[in-house]
Length: 240
View 1 (tube, rainbow, N blue to C red):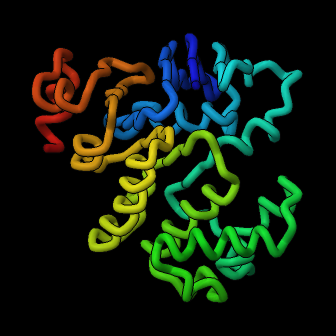
View 2: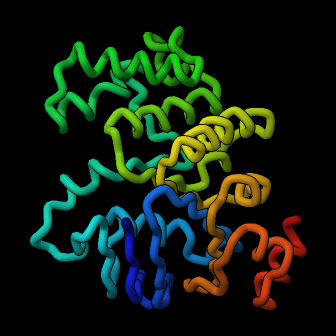
């Protein structure tokens, strides 16, 4: 579904990504772990060109999205993105936040978009919050709404950028539950996270990144029980 070839990203003299190579198949849950500053979030943001790569190619569903001739906005509609800090529109209700993109970008009829939104809210147990504003929600509720907002576009892949790092510890579980459910339904996911339990339980493949490149990848069993790379071992000894 996604093939990343020799991906580089520079911010001025800072060389953040150094030749990342990754292939992601349909239905996989790829969990990206590694120390802060290793390039994980930059890598994720390059996948839908929120960050423009300096070099390399990203092939998404057979289309080279780094080719300027392709309509990235059209392609982005197939990639749901969930951010660390929710990025909900504060002046819109929960329902309006969820229906905005389907109506504006996919030309869905407002009534249809509303029906879909309410069905998604029901699925995560928050249908009674439809008319609330983001300021009236807890962090965990905001993040679940942010996930639903991305799902309302019926994406082919979901990208999660440290979705639980801004949450109080007791709210982390409710967000991870929604993500586990998505994974069990076969949603293709790329998740940058510090939640090692989630990586171990839900990931089909774990990528360990450090200094802008993928140092090691494998099944959760391989990475957590028997890492081959010294840097992976060192990192896991500090976080597990």
